[in-house]
Amino acid sequence: MRRLAVIMTVLLCSLAIMSTTIAASSFTRIKDVAKVQGIRSNQLVGYGLVTGLNGTGDSTKTLQTMQSLSSMLKTFGVTVSAAQMQAKNVAAVMVTAQLPPFVKSGDTIDITVSSMGDAKSLQGGMLLQTPLRAANGQVYAVGQGAVSTGGFSASGGGSSQAKNFPTVGTTPNGAIVERDVATQLVTNGAITLSLHQPDFTTANRISEAIDSRFGSISIARDPGTVIVNVPGQYEGNIVSFVASLEELSVNPDNVAKIVINERTGTIVMGANVSIDEVAVAQGGLSITIAKEQTVSQPPPFSNGSTVVTNNTTVDVKEDKANIMVLPATANVGDVVNALNAIGATPRDIISILQAIKAAGALHADLQII
Picture 1 (cartoon, rainbow, N blue to C red):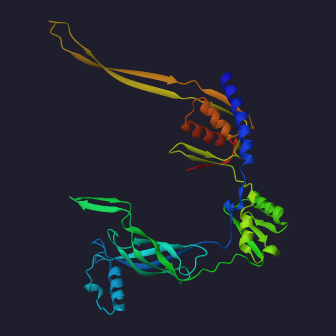
Picture 2: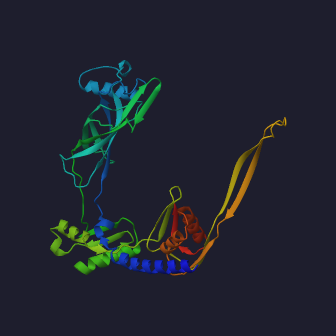
């Protein structure tokens, strides 16, 4: 116990120094904890056809593919009914894309192509010109190009193998943007900052950091929003003003939380986690059962027979429990390091943390994944 007390004292002193160093270096940029409201991506979706497949396309049972192929051929002056279609090198697909902010007409974006029928593979196919629409129904891009699946599919002898997903592929730079997306950064002479993780303290600190640099121009409206009025000298140069805001340093605050993964024995905790005074005992009971066969041979010329017997040995061992008392100033880092010092496994530490939480001595959210 004296050795354990020495270890605990050294750990507490070391962690106190480390916590001071971490607190001094935990400042980050506003750019990393908030974003300017209005800057966002937009989802695009379209329906199209992939041709040129080596017999791995949709079957004739997929009616939408046959009807789509028939309708497309009519635009080129070829009249063929859907019932007459027997093509297996065509697949109906859904085409999706992310339209980044500030893209201009003529820019290219990546697209993802996924089969919606019974096609076996899209490998080697070519996506025909497909309009991509946003939620408002307007076309913002047009996609076309070779589909890359990045996998393989093989079959033979009654067995088959597949790597990745051959029915889903991508076309890098496969869509051309046809319409600009209007982005409004300034509303009524102000910029709105949206926090990635809403928090009262963090929003107030952001407002204080901005006011200390530009004067009283900001206000924290709620835990997730900070309103910043644009100074007169920056009215014609909004980009420079936003860049100056993003480079300001702030010390973000978070709710104390411990995340536990019981499958892998992983424990992740924040620096604000604390506990009340608590006593912890760690020990275990192990039972070992061993079976051994012994052979009894009769003396020579005794006309006896060999006898085989089974002997079972049961060994019960209980480890000596290590009891420690942690003061109310200790944090979870102290608990974990002290338990490691006495040989506790990650599984033991997880169980002990859950027990401390159940006892009401752990002041943090315990999240198990």
